[in-house]
Image 1: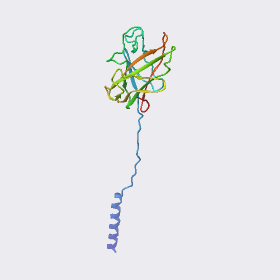
Image 2: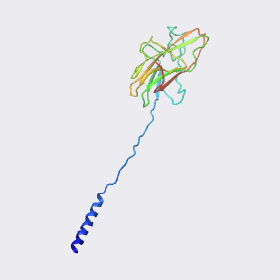
Image 3: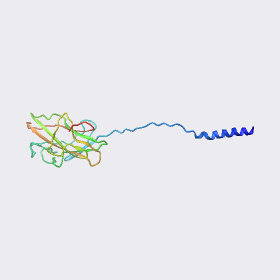
Image 4: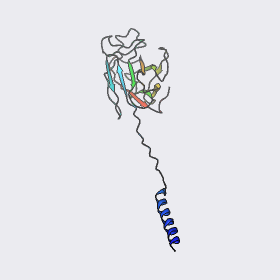
Amino acid sequence: MDIWRKILLATVLVSLAMAPLAIGDYAYTPVTFVVQSSMSFTVTGIGWGPVSSSGSAPGTGTTRIYFNSSISTTPQVIGPCTDRDNATNCQTNSNPMLNFTNTGTATFNMTIRVNESLSVGGGTISLYYNSSCNGGTCNSTVLNSNLALDTSNWKKVCTQLPTTAGNWCGVWLWANFSGVAAGSYTNDLLHNSTLTQGTP
């Protein structure tokens, strides 16, 4: 009788000793943290800037630039200056009027267009651009390979401008007046950073 009692006791003790070895089941929930990309930039002009972009249209205004035929040495291809009546702080063959820098967290396309018709003063103002860049891809580095701006199409001046330091997008501008009466005419040149829109 004592023998069976000892065997039973030993069985109970063994069972109790094994209980803590039981392992529970597991599951997990994947968690993804999404941080919105920023497509901010600065624009610097000859004699002014940098000016930071804004998240709402039409954006932050910069210093005005002038295309003045009376001070241009090439009346048919008029380059811009920051000063209205003096040929100072002007665009040169090696120094573009506008320089864009990516200050955001996403690579983007830099695009521009005018906000109002350039048919003014009984004639037409043609506004052309060209670009060069360090990082990304530009339309052209040849100054006479000009492209026209209008109100309906955003034009890519630089494609895939990266966020890394030292990268920039320089834009040259030229105007041509055809049959435009003497006077002063104002327009806005809009700048936009975008992932998709824009045409060459």
